Amino acid sequence: MSQEFFPNTSPGTRGLVYREPLIFERSVPGRSGASLPSAGVPETDPADEIPAELLRGPIEHFPSNSENEVVRHYVRLSQTNHSIDTGFYPLGSCTMKYNPKVNEWAARLPGFANAHPYLPPEQLQGVLELMWNLQNLLSEIGGFAATSLQPAAGAHGELAGLMIIRAYHLDRHGTPRKKVLIPDSAHGTNPASAALLGYQAVELPSNEKGMLEPEVVARAMDEDVAALMVTNPNTLGIFETHIKEIAEIVHAKGGLVYGDGANMNAILGVARPGDLGIDVMHYNLHKTFSTPHGGGGPGAGPVSVAAALEPYLPRPVVVKEGDAFRLDFDRPKSIGKLRTFWGNFGMMVRAYTYILELGREGLRRTAELAVLNAQYLRKLLEADWHVAYENPSLHEVIFTDRNLKETGVTTMDVAKALIDHGFHPPTVYFPLVVSGALMIEPTETESKETLEAFAAAMKAIYERAKTDPEGLKRAPEKPVVERLDEARAARKPVLRWTPDFEIPF
Amino acid sequence: MAQTVPQDLKYTKDHEWVRREGDELVIGITFFAQEQLGDVVYVELPEVGAEVQAGQPFGVVESTKAVSELFAPASGKVVARNDELVDAPEKVNQDPYGVAWMIRIAPSNLAELDALLDAAAYQKYVEEQQ
Image (tube, rainbow over all chains, first blue to last red; front, side, top):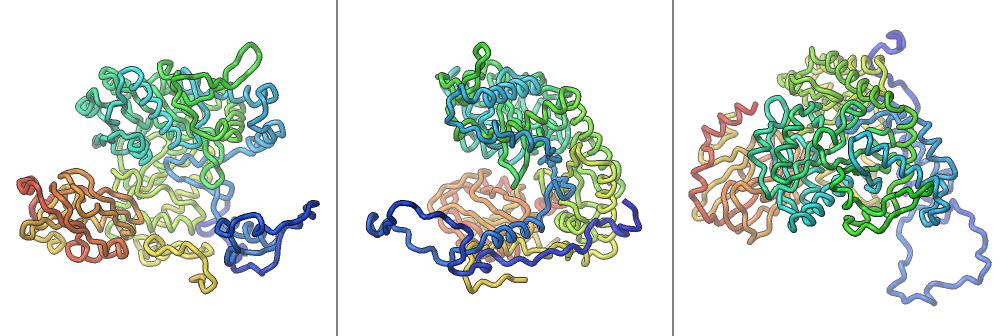
């Protein structure tokens, strides 16, 4: 990437981007994209058969467009989007690693892609074998006894895990217990999952190093506590070195330890949460195991458990008998079924492909490089940017806007300015314990050159904040729409198009 | 900073203020709180008649940055809530100590106010936070 071609740090140039109207505005009454054959049976008027109050009637302003209009509309919209296939996406805590195309090849193999979940097991042996193998691989990778692939996303996995914990306490002690302990750096989904099951979420403060202290857990721990939820490394990117001692404190009072596997990418193949005293953990296949994320999903949040919790896993689980595989529904202690059919199977194929492609050494190398990349970015940026915690961080690092305080430029302005440089902004204002957080997670799939280009953009933004803060606050100026009024969009959202609606640009 | 911490109020470490008006208490969030939150876009308050408990959440305030819980400075029964904030949450940014009051309660234990910060202590606390 030579400086002659890129005199500033933005890779953007003047590609033609269409100012695309809404599909409603492209509508021409009577136009259609479908040409259906005649039904072959006499047509009837629904009004003759169905009571008037049950008839829907015409939908006002429903768009009528030809096929190519629809295709061009959505392709043009997609061209204004940023994705992992168009650029660097250092969204902290989300592990936006590149999604290898070989995963897509595997998921499109007709035997997988066309398998119907209602086929009898003898016709689904390949599908069930893949699920069985993936269950076992995930158990092995995390150091657990058993795994369910059913949950549809990370938060769903959390819910499944806490339901398992709840079922365990009910079964063992006749009570689900009352409280769940959660550090203040946790993902917001942790207290939400606990609350959804009727638990009181008790917040534990982390110390000045960004870590959970055993004494803090010990003070909060009693026989009303069902579980402690921990993320390791935590959302500050810091490894909780006291995790074994903390797990012992929780276990001593009969509680369980839930592991939020969102940050598994930092320790994959290096440490096994099951060996660290974690009893239940969810994986995010769409983070750690390179399946699509966000709008490209769906996600998948398998949940792995220690042996004592195996009876409570969602049903069915895949079992192997001789050389044959089948779905086992006969699990009386199971928390039940959590997902239509058997989970997001396409994601299982992609994750399985990824694991087999990398193998044991490759997975370990993933974590090592993810940490190395984050360390490299930290070194490149720390001369200008204030690091939230001096402690060594692993796969992600948190900076703040403290050094820009005098300029009036905030974390939000920095995030917006990065868009003009062709980068997706990092996670901002999270975790909540850090004021003005800029949470950067580069992942292992980015090259040294990309990291350096990002660091150069951050440096350019830092310097512009000192010399031209007002200009910086107008960013982004290069996208098809400039800076949006987020407050107005949230306060006065326009949720439905009407013919007199005017696009405000 | 001086005018952003009115002298006649009591404060919590979670950045709520409370003003005594006759037998009732008026509650809102501080200038520092709205400044930290940024543009407030949504406010959720308890129904009139609901009980609030000192130190426990009584509502939610959401900005373009984050969602935060509101913690009651004192216990009591809600006698009024500021419904104007539902339609105009920006008032929290514009006038946090005035038109953007949040709830009015009939307190059950006025002694709880003694545990709160006075203006000087709150100002010191805020400076430490920065």
